[in-house]
Amino acid sequence: METSAARLQHRQVEITGSRVGAQKVSATQAIREYSFLGLADAKHAIDKVLDGSPVTIEARGEQAALDLARALEQLNFIVGPAPRD
Image (cartoon, rainbow, N blue to C red; front, side, top):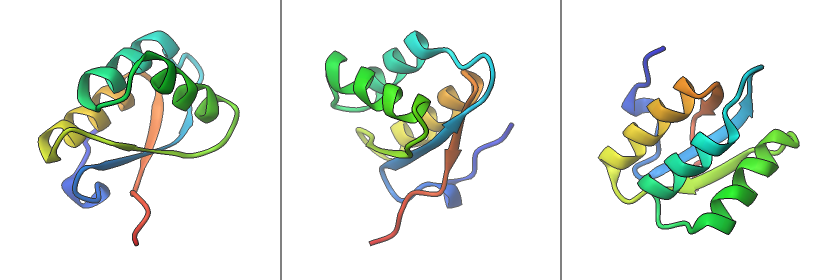
């Protein structure tokens, strides 16, 4: 699955859901790698998504946002367009 820059709002990545087989631990690690969130906040974000709530993550930069979106999609999470201000 390909992620386009149009689906990202600068440095923000919105995780809108998950698919069967979503890899919680790996997704938490990806969020920690590509954002400024620590372990507890990254885990909380993934838990919220798994409970059905969308979450917006602020990445370290535009390239980090693209990399995070790709990583999350490979881990069976659904990445949607970031909310607009």
